[in-house]
Every structure is written in structure tokens, then in C-alpha cells.
Image (tube, rainbow, N blue to C red):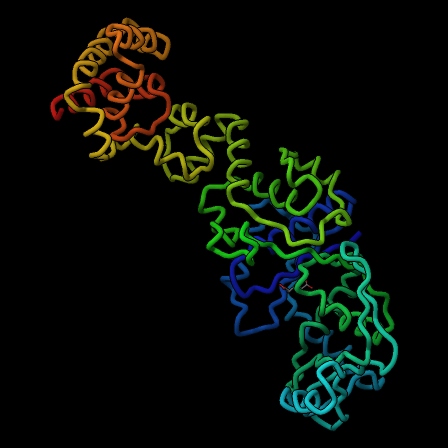
Length: 443
Ligand code: GLU
């Protein structure tokens, strides 16, 4: 099996593109196949080196490696010209100066579904001759057969008048030369496929098999965009998702197990992935589900590994203890700092929290808690828990939160933090007392 991922470097790698890359990768890795990376950079204005870099970075981040490439499509210009000339010489393609306007007029006269045929000329763009009769059938591993009647197909333009070749020609030539066996790509290319099949036929070559992946939608049924939380791999990365969770989620998206989401190892994914089981309906990318799955990955991760990821993400070091006590409470790497940053940077400033929990009613509890924290024999989670439970029980009117929330607000400045005993233990006695005293001085 030989598959390929063929992004156009006209922007960031979209999540849909990442899914296409992943499915090709899973096919290659699950079938002892080869994955070819081809950069379709023939659109010289929109393809920039920065965009290529971004795509390669995104693939690296997702740990999707390739076996051949990256091959620049532009670097294959000579080969494209050679085969273009062959089709012209054999009369399978012709030059024509017909413009889009001519095609429009033709349709007006003959009806919109009548295929346009140009008149061969000495100059102009190159069009491929579509046979007048018969049809071309796209056999798709996901969608089954789609029949395209030749009478309805326009002779497609395969090269501009200046000789530069267009996508439908270049893609077929490149896939052919790379001996691609399976073309797996987005559904937006389905209507291009009959044109490409005709290119293969004109070249006297056997086409690969095709599988067109359904589009990605947001939960509202609209095309996936930034509004849905993220649209590109870079955005997912910046939002603190783990690449392995993203891979897992994308792999299951629109394929078998989507509803009863589970954690599958890369090995299990490559074993189980079968492109023929991908659903035809648009797949829904739900950032909430990804967050849930990401949280599971975080909770199951080794603390040292998670610490490494959090330190990379935040650019800070020495976070291990704080990560260990936050692991149960964060869904993404980005959740860590807002939750636990107070351990390093001091309390946040949430006046509402102070107003509510450092009022006169809670002052006595806070004084007693300070005393317990100052005198507990050993400063660890177990002893702190025992000592503070005694403070709660000292007054039958008190609920646990009447003691714990004032402490939390004193330490963190807000009402969200990792566990209170754990936070105290990480801060240490001196720093904890300093913050409690500061709170008491204000209260
Ligand atoms: N370069 C095309 C794109 O990024 C994909 C071509 C293909 O997979 O055939 O949409």
C-alpha cells in the first residue's frame, strides 16, 4: 500500500487536513505501507515557505511521520510538461483560447448541464478531451460508486496558456509516478476525481483506489471554523491539547467508535482503522468531547511526563509538585496555570471572593485555621487534614467550606485551586502563614 498526504501550503494546517493526514498515516502504518508527503505548492502566490513550515510543524507535533518527501509539486514541473506535451501530441488534449465567459455563453445556449467542448487552436490553455459518450465512475471506498456522464462534463483545463499545469493534471501525474495505491482525501475533491480519472485514462494508466472523507462540521452543523473553539492544529496546540489525545479523537471522529469514546493506543488505532468504515455523513468536531478525552489522557499520564508537558507549555520550571496536585482537575495544559499559578506568583486578586469568604462571619474560623496551621506537628497533607477537621468540628454551626474556603481564598486569592491540604503542603508552612496573615490583616 502506498498512500500520500498532499496539502496545499496556503495557510495553517486545518483540523480537517490533520484528519486526512492521520487517516493516511494509520493506513500506511497498519498495512506496512508507505506514506508520501507531497507539498502542492503550484499556487505560487498563496504557497509560502512559512506555510510549508507550519504544516511540517503541525505534522511533527502530531507525531505523524512520513516515509518519502516532502516532495514539492513545483519541483516536478519538467515531468508535468513532458506528459502534457504527450497528451497534446497524441490528440488527447488541445489548446484553446476559450475563456470562462465563452463557457458561460455556451451553457446559456445549450443548457447548464451540457458539457463544454472547445475548438482546438494553435495557442491558449490546454484542455483535456472528454469523450462525447459514456461515463466515468468513481469507485469510492467510503461513498460507493458515483457515475459522471461525459455529456455533462466540460473539457477540463489542465494547463494555463503560459504552460503552468493545474491541480487535476498535476495531482494525477504525481500520484501515478509515486505509485500511489490509495488516494484518501477530503470530500471536497470528489467532483475533481472524474477529471483525474480521465487524465489517468488519457495517459493509459491504471488509477489508484479513492476514499473521500466527509467534511468536518462543528456541533451546530456548520463547517468547522474558529468559532467552534479551534480550526487549525496550531490552535489546538495553543489551547493546551495533547497531540496523542487529538490523534485519538480525530481517529475516532466519524468512524465506528465515535459515540462510546475510548482511549485507544496508537497500536490499537493502526490495527483497527479501516477507511471503509468511515461514515458518509459529515463528522462533528466537538471541542468539548476533545477536552473530555484530553482530561482522561492527562489523568492517566505519568506525573513526570505531565510535568514535562506543562513546563514546555508554560515555559516555567520546577512545577512537579504543583502538577501532581492539579492533575485531577485540569482538562488541558492551559488549565494548569490559572488553577495553580498562585502557588508561584502569589494570590490572585478576586475582590468578590475576599468579600464573601473573608467577612466578619468567617474571621474567627480563619484565625483558628491559622493557629492550627501554625502548630500542626508535621506539615503534610495528613496532619493538616486532621488539624483543620478539628477546626471545622470546633463549632457545630460550621460547615467544612466555612473553614476551607477562607483558607483557599487566603492562599489563592480565588475560590478555585487544587485541594486545600495539598496546596498548603506545596506552599510550605512559612508561605502559607504569610498569606493567611496578609488575609487576616485585610479582613
Ligand atoms: N492539495 C489538495 C488540498 O490541499 C489536496 C489534493 C489531494 O489530496 O488530492 O486540498
